[in-house]
Image (cartoon, rainbow, N blue to C red; front, side):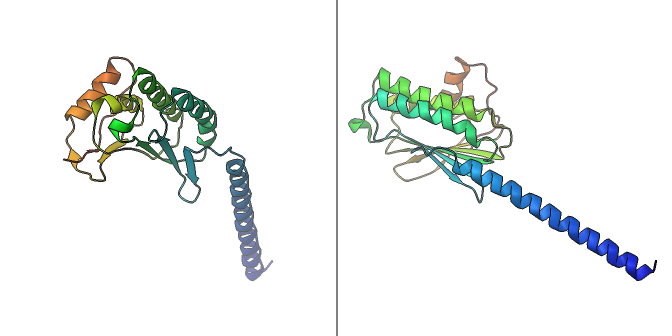
Length: 205
């Protein structure tokens, strides 16, 4: 058998192997696409397959009814685990309405805290996350309104970040600030979760 024939045979074998690998990748991608397409739609969830980013919008601005909160949360926590093998980046956006127009009582605060705590509980089961980013949008920081956000301090991801956008403006806040201290110890008193080691907390001055 000539050397040239051997080289050609090896080349054909390698080419066939490359085609086989490409076909396997396409089949896997097609399977993933089908799985994602089969996930039910939820108004609080948006997935971008190209960068594997899952946006979770907890929109409390237009919801004043604990019943509405709980109904949306129950469907959310049923759907959220379906993204565990697809999402590598998470962005949680928590939106609050104008404080004096919001219904702020024990029922709404409990419903909002329950929603966030359940999201955190499900996300802690995700095993291929590269980053988790949390942002909270408010007109102004009103403690009674934003108390439920302390639930995010139960996140197990070691380097998740937290930002507060107040009336569209952002400024850095140091670790151990009042907000950081408040959220950390509020959860520490009620949970045994390992708390995050670093934070990027942003708030308007």
